[in-house]
Length: 370
Figure (cartoon, helix red, strand yellow):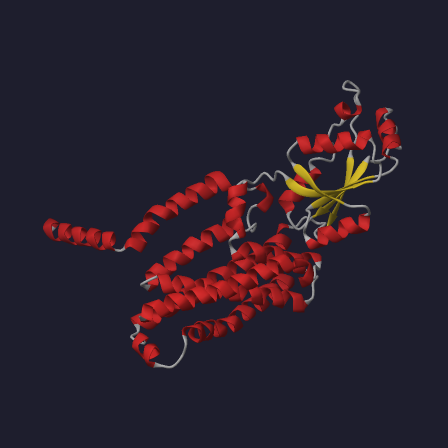
C-alpha cells in the first residue's frame, strides 16, 4: 500500500512541476498576501488630501496650517476662495476634507486664551463622511493643541475646530460598504465568467468550429462579453435595491450616471477576464488567475482600507486596477450626487482599459489560431 501511495505522490509532484501556472500561484499568492497585509494595508489614514479656505490670511493661519501638516495626518493639496468651491470639490472627490479659517480667527484665539465662555471654534472642517476612517482622523484634529503656533509655547490655550460631516452624517459604515461591495461583486463575477470563456471552448472541443467560421477574433471577443453585460446590470440593480430597502443606503445621484459608470466598469472587467482566458490553459488556471486579480482589488481599491493610507508603490498598483477607478465613481455618484462628467478621469481610464484589453485578447487569440 505504501508503495502505491508513494507512486501516486511522485506522479502528482511531477504533474504539478509541469503545470507552471499552478506552481507559480503556489509561490506568488502567499508572497502577494504577505506584501499586501504587511506593507500596503494600513488602517491609519495619513496624508489625507485636504483643501483650504483661508479668509484670515495672516501669520497665525499659516502657523496653524504648518502645525496640522506636521502631524502627517493631512496634506493641504488645494486652495479655494469660497466655501461653495470647497463643497464642490468634496462632491467631486478631489479632496476628502476642507479647512475653513474665518477672517476673525485672531479674535477667536484671544477668546480661547482668555477661557471665554462665548469663545467660538477658530475654524471649521468640512469632511466627506462617506469614508468613516478618514472622518475619524479629521475628528481627531478637533481639539488639536495650537499653543506653539501662536508664539506662546506655555500659554494653556486649546483652540478647537468645528467638524461638519457631509454625505454620511450618522457615520454608518454600511453607507460606505454597499457601493464598494458593488465593485467587488462585479469584479469577482465578471472576471470569473469570462476568464474561462476561451478555455471552455477548447475543453468542450469547440475550438475547431470557431477556427472554421468566418468570425474575426475581435468580433468573437466582443460577442463573448455582451451577454454578461446584461448580467452585470442585473447585479447592480439587485445590490442597490436591496441596499436601499434593507440598509437604507441612499442613492443620491442620477440613475443615468450610475448605470453609465457601471457599464464602463463591467466592460473593463469582462475584457480583463478575456485576457486571462487567452493566457490560461485550463479552467482551474483561469480561476487561479481570477483570485490573483480579485485579492488586490479588494485590498487596494479603497473598499476595505483608505486609499490615502497606502504607501505610494501600493497606490501605483491600485491605479492599475479597474476596481479602484470604479470605487471612486460609484461612491461619488451614489453618496455625493456627483455627475459623470466630474468623474471623467476615471471614466476615460476605464474606457481606455476596455479598448486595450479587447485588442490584447484579440491578438493573443489570433496567435493561438496559428
